[in-house]
Amino acid sequence: MIKPENIDEYIRAFPKEVQVVLEKVRTTIQKAAPDAKEKISYSMPAFEQNGIIVYFAAFKNHIGLYALPGGHETFQEELSKYKSGKGSVQFPLDQPMPFDLITRIVKFRVKENLEKSKKK
Image (spheres, rainbow, N blue to C red):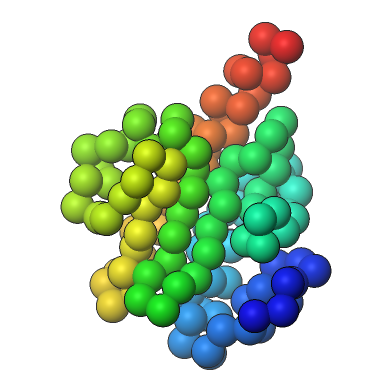
């Protein structure tokens, strides 16, 4: 995969059925964080507002969401049914995408970033 310049390029690099899911994830994040700016960071789509809110990425069998440790710790119980790491979770492509959960995680991360920025 060629390093994408923006999220549109990133999404276009995947098969159509994955593009549809990626666009829905993107739109979900945009609605939950309307003031966030899109960018590519670590070759992944990212949303930034007072720091990175979330990254997301497509893989062969899942969509990865990276809400950094704070988002994953707070929603640990709901995320427990998914394969996850310290700051990542894998949503399988063969299961319904939990858009409501993604929305709540993103809103939490916006608030968490705002609180951190006020302390600086």
